[in-house]
Every structure is written in structure tokens, then in C-alpha cells.
Length: 157
Image (cartoon, rainbow, N blue to C red; front, side, top):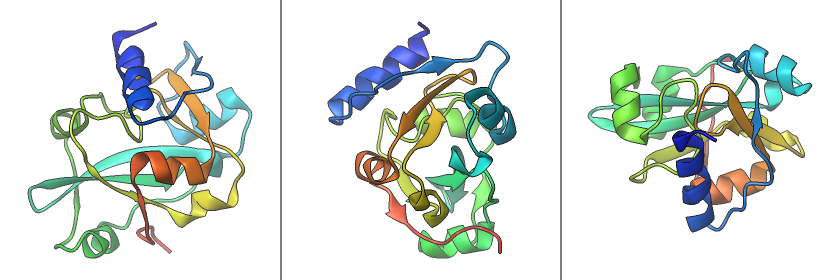
């Protein structure tokens, strides 16, 4: 198991969440479509963990794989100006994980997190587990709890 997946599992345990399984796909799960095909679920059950900056503060947008973040809406719900997508270096600095494998929680320091309400309609969703080829299942309500996520509308209509 990779060091990033171990760090994710350890952090999840500290937060009181026992990750039921981590599935690895050697072909990768970098996009929501790739992940959905590999897992055998709907693309809107995939959690995209996207790092943005609102001013100088990083925020994490947990978005359904079928949706796109509206930077203006995300900035407003975060209480600032328009958000901008973090560079890969900024995202890694904020979360400790590489883009494509960023989990929704388990970062070295708390990152304010927002959750797309479109994810709440499912019994189970799938998110990155620390690397671009690893995912794990979680119930949306548990994701809100463990990630300390604020449910908010920040997607394009």
C-alpha cells in the first residue's frame, strides 16, 4: 500500500472513521468518468475533491462527478470574493496530497470544506483515498460528518 493511502487511513482513524475498503485501479481513476467506469457506479456518485483559493485561504469543494464548480458561487458561500482553482502545488500544500488523489478529509491541517448537495441523494458515494488510482466508499451523511463539510450550492446550473 502506498504511503499516501496509509496516511489517509491513519487520518481517517483519528477522525473516528474506519475506512471499509480501499479499491485500487492500476489504470487510474483520475477523472470522475474513469472512476465511475472502474467502480461500476454512476458518475454522479463520484466525489471530486477540488481545491480552490478564496483570497489566500484554501477551500475544498466536494462535488458530484456530474457537476462543475461555479467559482463565483463558491467564493460567495465561503464568504469572500470569487474563488480560483488552486495550482497543483497549492493544492498539495493545502491538503498534503497530489491532485487526482486528494481525499475529502485527512489533511495535515483543517481545510474549510463544502459539499455539493447533489451527493446527498445517494446511499453510497466514492472518493479518492490518497492516490489517483485508489478510491473508497462512504455514505454521504458520514462524509459530511467526517469532513466537517458545509452543505452548500456552489455548482453551475
